[in-house]
Length: 257
Image (cartoon, rainbow, N blue to C red; front, side, top):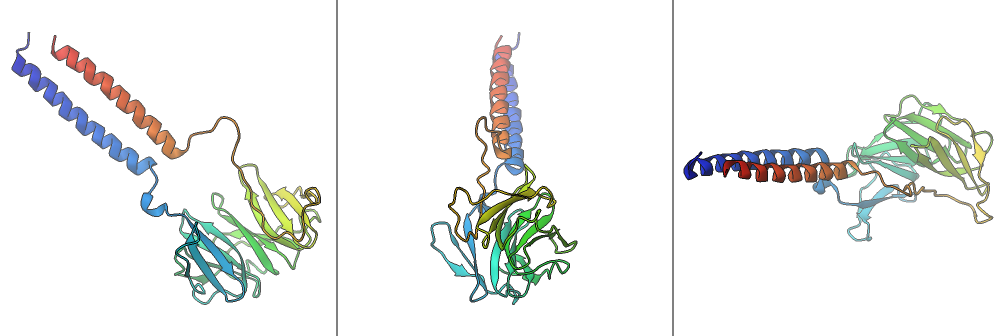
């Protein structure tokens, strides 16, 4: 049978090793799963058509600043979309048929051009970052343009089965494979597959539309929620902590018998 001194040494060694392992696991999970708090400051971005600038402010309207002309690339900016994962904003310029891209602080502005000559009065813009595409609603040309996020590979997806009439706003449901477009002239909403096929008119939404411009989608799912990546991390951490507690209690019982 072990004496009291050896029992204490065994328990102390196990406790130190267990704590070190626990600290390492927590650190790893923190880097892998938990959000970066320093970057999690919510902002709004606004395209100013008349003075060719971008405004940024807190979501409560405070802290408003002008991010300027994005390196002189803006010309009648209308639509704006954000790629938060890569730190970029994309802006549709109605007056010169171009797309501007810049860092989220307004620096590094560049023009991505006319997307292969497909733009004609661009207004709304939406991003499918996972597939590397941007989609632009051409209010004058009654078409949708698609291009890579660097502006290359521009193609016209056409009139979505003849349903477009002065398209202004555009929004994507990437998970279901649909785009939705607000028709400012036709007072209707168009829906089509992300490749432009299968276009249908969803009509006037019960007679409520009157020169619609913006469109946004609430894609939250009802029913059982699927945990996010950070939530999975916290679940794994909780299980590891519970397992560690059980092992410590079992080890304590073993070294004291």
